[in-house]
Amino acid sequence: MQADQPADPPPPFDVAKAAALMRDSPAGMAVFDTELRYLYVNPALERLNGIPAAAHLGKAVAEVLPGVDAAEEVMRAVLADGKPREAMSSGHTWASVPEGERFWQGAYHRLEEAGEVCGLVGVVLEISVAHHQQRELEQARSYLSLLDTASATIGTTLDMDTTCRELVDFVVPALADVAVVEVFPPEVGHAVRRPPEGVVRLRRAAMALGPALRDTVSPFGAAGEYIDYQQDAAVQRCLATNRPVIENLYSDEQLDRSAPTRGRVAGYRAVGLHSAVIVPLTARGRPLGVLALARTGDSPVFTEGGDVVIARELAGRAAVDLDHARRYAHEHTIARELQRSLLSEPRGPHPHVQVASRYRPADEGALVGGDWFDVIPLRDGRHLKAMGDVMGHGVEAAVAMSHYRSILRAVAEDDMEPHRILQRLDDAVVRSGVDRAATCLLAVVDRYGGICRLASAGHLPPVFLDPGAPRARVAAHMPVGPPLGSGFGGYETTDVPCGPGTVLFMYTDGLVERRGEDIDVSVGRLASLTLPASGRLEDLLDEVLDRFAEDAEDDIAVLASRVHEGVSFSHHG
Image (cartoon, rainbow, N blue to C red; front, top):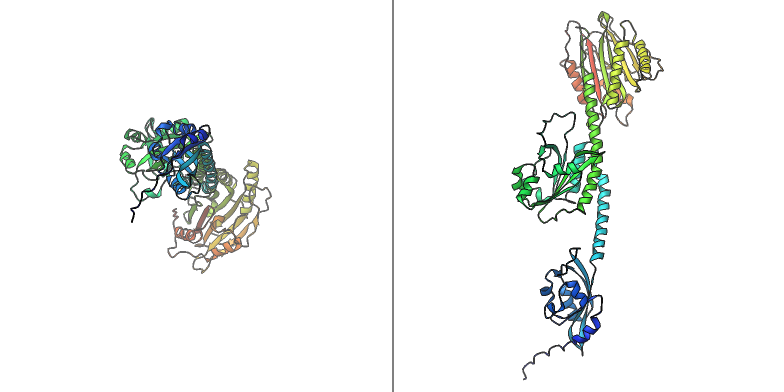
């Protein structure tokens, strides 16, 4: 039995013939032996790879181009079965190009001579420009989709902190591992200490962390705190130039300069923070604060293009929503403070008259309204009580409310019937130029006569709670004239029994008016009111608000009074 003979080596490849065919081709071309070592490289491939042909010969691709993913598994498959294949490669060659990472499309064919496999030929075309353009197009489409989504998810309310939370939740993890929104403190409604000279003080309104950071002890602080930034901090530079500031934090010195406090540098290092960008939040030429984004771990650094461009676009859109929210909050605060200052507690009109009042503003999502009340002493133990509601909301409504109350005090006279007072009030309002209508209910109580004289200008009826009675009386059938400010007049006075101990309860529509419910049904529920066991008017009002004001959508003013012989006046709330 003969010993196995070694396999014959593959036939030699005619390199000269290949050179004649490939030399002038604009595509990069190479011939490999069966071990995928270079046998020939044409001039075009020399230029692509950035080294001469001689540096290729006899070496594998990985030896010549260690920075290139050459798809050798595809080349070996072509050698094995002879089926031509294409593959894309990427990486960096020795040629210096400005595009950074490069991309090539390669086509591979097996070479055979006299039926024997003798090597492989590869044809390579660079597609870097087209690939980058395609990637930029896909990124642009992604950014447009991101912006479309942002329009629906950021700025859904007129609350600043909610808008800030929506912004940070949106950009993490889409653009960053950490996102923080910090804003200048409000100008009114908050007492914040003044920062030192040259220091910018911001309030951290919202913060979001990526999934990998949520279980760690955050070195980024917490929402709600105030942070001081020194003059060389990125935040100050961002606000001064109204442009994004990119900080690639390679050294502790850079981290120290960017951190709001030096104690946080170690925490930043612990989570691998290495890149940050500060984006201004500006609306109508006014800085509102900053959006700060940070990346940690293996996330890429921020650069001038790409993510920073989209971050600035998102910040610009969010700034418009924040400006609306800030202006709303500013007006809301002024209106509320004005209304509270004008709704001073009614003074006791007489030692034998008890009065209690409450004012409850609507939820934070609604502007302050023009609810008002007043108690004016008259002669002979009588007193005039007024409950009104100016149409609309905001500062204008609060100011109009103050005008109505001042005019009422000027026109009310001792011997005048309630409907005559309303008529004079209506005429005076029309002459004064106040452009907001108002409802108003007047009640004149005669503690000796045991009656209450009522007149209404578009206002809801009062409620009477008699001592020992199982249910309250709603004056639902009293005549109701047009609202004040219309100039139509036509008011009437109605007498209702109101003896000693009977409580007169007056209110604005925010207490009972509910969307989708008939107002008569809403008012009818007030007939279930009874005097509390304590007999205190303050307890009655607390019970009323607990029962009826929970889902109110408007401001509420309530007033309770009674004539009670032998009891001195007391008032709280």
